[in-house]
Every structure is written in C-alpha cells, then in structure tokens.
Length: 71
Ligand SMILES: [Zn+2]
Image (cartoon, rainbow, N blue to C red; front, side, top):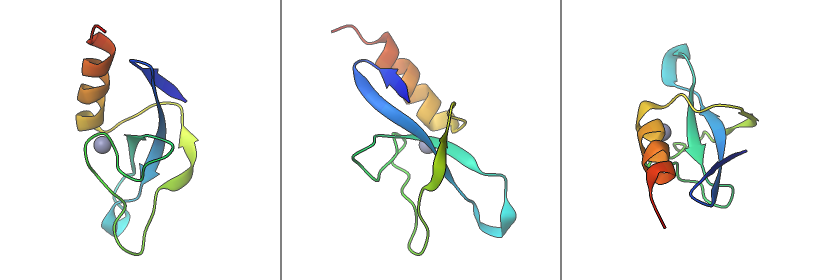
C-alpha cells in the first residue's frame, strides 16, 4: 500500500500483450483506473497480488506530484 497526499494506492500489474514485461501502475483500491488513466483492457484485469512499488513512469510522475503537493 502506498500513500500519497493522504490518498491510498496499490501497485497493480497490468500484463502487456505478447508477453511484454509487466508494468505496475498506481491504482486506487476503489477504482479500476490507474493514476496515469490506464485501465485493464477488455478481457483482462489488474493482476494480484499488488507489488510494493510502482514501475509505470507516468504513474510515478503523478505520485511524486501528489507527494509534493501542499494542502
Ligand atoms: Zn500507470
């Protein structure tokens, strides 16, 4: 579980097509959409279990912004 600016996120894996390396996105526990607006496509979903760290560059940028936000 990650906390940024009072919000909770979990790092969930989205498997790429054609056995590409998986990417871990920051997803809120109650929403299917990741911080970077990625969603699991039709016929797939966020893969459990969650990781301890996010690897998606877009999600990481937004997490940093949230952590740096004041108030
Ligand atoms: Zn992402």
